[in-house]
Image (cartoon, rainbow, N blue to C red; front, top):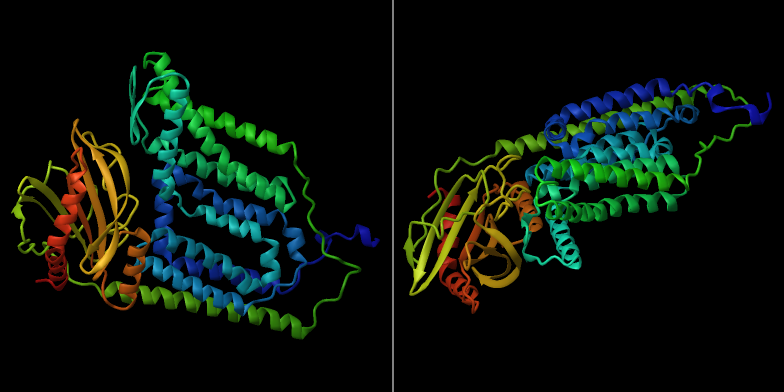
Length: 521
């Protein structure tokens, strides 16, 4: 046998694998047991959401990708890395932050990262680099992407309206809803294309890894797999409206809407893969440089490597247990539930009414307590809604993708605009979130929204989560609240001035009511 004929498959695996591989499997199992609530939350989302059902096949794909290069892995010598153990500790803290701030995606990404870091901790960085892509592919198991849905819906609506007008069809558009001569349409969650996007990027990334060897081509195809479904979804939405318009709304409505969409998407994705395959690069596994069969490792080496892997595995599990225990301690430090929010005190110049304005209420859910009232001053009227949250978790939390000011299926109101507006409130400058709503013509309503988190004010979802995490980590609880003001918007824009006047007068009363609720008074 000459050197060229000597293949890794003909060599015996290093003896250290007999200890290192079972150790890694046991480490993974213990990590999943320690963080089982996070893992089960991921599985639950895979089960109930078609968008993330691919999560079930991501781990098997990772194992298959590793199995297909097992021959070249067998001749590598397992080692260990305490640097990976330190990184594991940092990721464990990120998991804790995600838990206390009720940021499911952060906790789930951290769990996957901990499973990945267990590989270099137990087997060493050399082996981890060899299977880097299969390990990183595990991140696709995290149900993540809903945050992009509002922006994708907005883009789809804009492109569809532009396409219709370019086709000579008159369109009256307000926000995500538009009217053409043959009927009215609206862009809802199913039209966002987020399912197409996630499916395309997941499969496209795997295709790029298996089809190309150069990093440039792989990254280029991943970028294409991101752009194509976005553009295809715009064209799909335009085509569905056009088919409905030309057929007198007999085609491309109801179930046909979804069927035509998936058929079109399937054709586009298959074309993308067919074109991408024309530039394929056959993959050759890199072979270890072997000159001749070597003797078995010395006793010292054979003993040192497994023992180091065992120590790294034990350290990893202990660190995981520490963060899991810390989370349980924080969860045990919960405040008593509250029955109702503290009443608002008098507001100078404004008279209170127990009823809300127009019967409208923000689409926030699962708050611990709430209050809603309207206030009048001369001919002006303002509505106020306070939603108070305590002992937040995955189901009951202030900031989430399901908590929105207005739901897309609202039969009476439609969002037609939005932005930010700077105000001075409780001695602090805040950029509140603004939304313009349209009701029955000619009714318009201006809405302002921001948050209170244990004494801090912000209109940013990210900052609200950061304040929540800081508050819980420092033992100060998770009391938070949603503040929403709303008023009719006149043609001359006086609604904004009315809200500004109310904010100046009501600021002390709102602040006092929230602090009294937190104190349980």
